[in-house]
Image 1 (tube, rainbow, N blue to C red):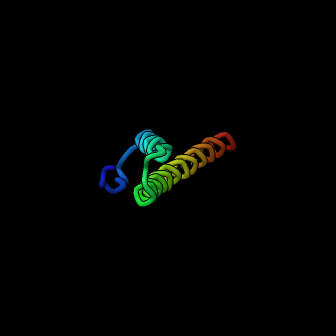
Image 2: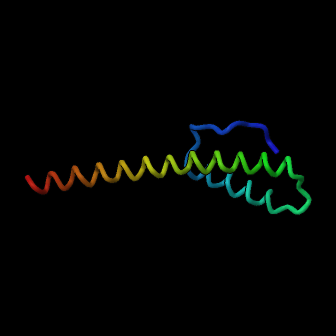
Image 3: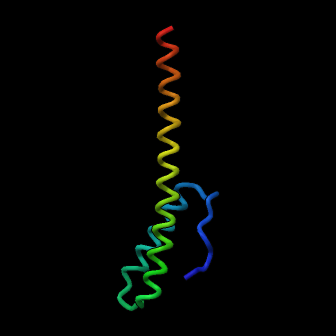
Length: 74
């Protein structure tokens, strides 16, 4: 397992790929408890960052929608 920390400058798709890799590793029957906990922790960090990106994208979409609705009312 790589010891790199979660980078906040990755794109959403990169986080999804990292999460999938963590899930694949966790499905290995030969993995030890300590290693599985480290992988789980890393996966949760990636998941949190991906969730933040989704929330930011949703806010941006809402702002754009409000701008267009405001223009339609003028």
